[in-house]
Length: 350
Image 1 (cartoon, rainbow, N blue to C red):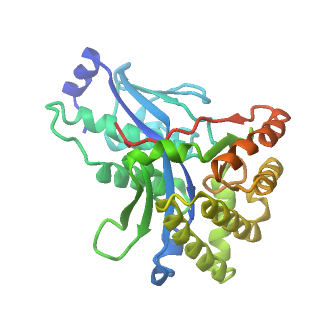
Image 2 (image 1 turned 90 degrees about the horizontal axis):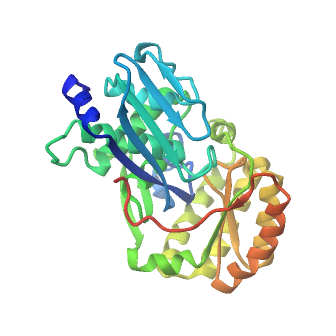
């Protein structure tokens, strides 16, 4: 817990941590609503951590107060005991409350657009847990492992979200890299198993086969996720979720083999299934980007739960190069839309 000693540490020097965001496929099954009934299918999610990092800096502030400053949000200074976890920055307040933080100014700077469906809020929570963990371990011994940081950040987010909350965003932020995450609740372990799909030496090659853009419209994941959860609970479309899991497994293998033509085909298939579940998982701009990708021999998918935010594409190098022109034309007509750099994060939380 935060102490006067820790406050004095911040007065001597700020504490900093950062974590990457991610692009993904095969998501949603990280919700226990899905992966427990589908456990016999070995549900998994693929994600690629990106060096669009969220950086957190802790600085001293007025005693008994807590201040949060974050790009895209109005700065807020509150008394910790009255901080609302329903506020747009409520997750940050909740993490701070877990560490009993007072007299602290939390600065958050994200390289990804706000609410872009890249897992930025979870990356911020992971970075913040890591920063407070460093304060609790001033002797430089390992404060918390990436696994414990991810699980704590997820537990806090699940506690305040008010809706089912998955774990893939926190894991990408904590571990980095290109991974498949197998969901194993009830196994007596942490509830997940990590499978590394590519090593860091493969990342420069992979980056040349991916395109990523922000569509100019923020997303609200609970809108889409909530409907998927409701459908599943009512017994609707469960065979489609089995198909999504199967496609995800094949995508893992294609990534391992660096078969980018197969990756393109499988990503398109997964997106097509999601469109059957919820046609608005791609907004109008996203549907144009998806069609353009298919026309150029690439596969494309929304990030996270869709409904706005970002779209990413994968394909053979020449196909990705050809895709840049039609995507540029589509994005040029949308205020705020733009390409985002693709650099795989070999390291997670720092």
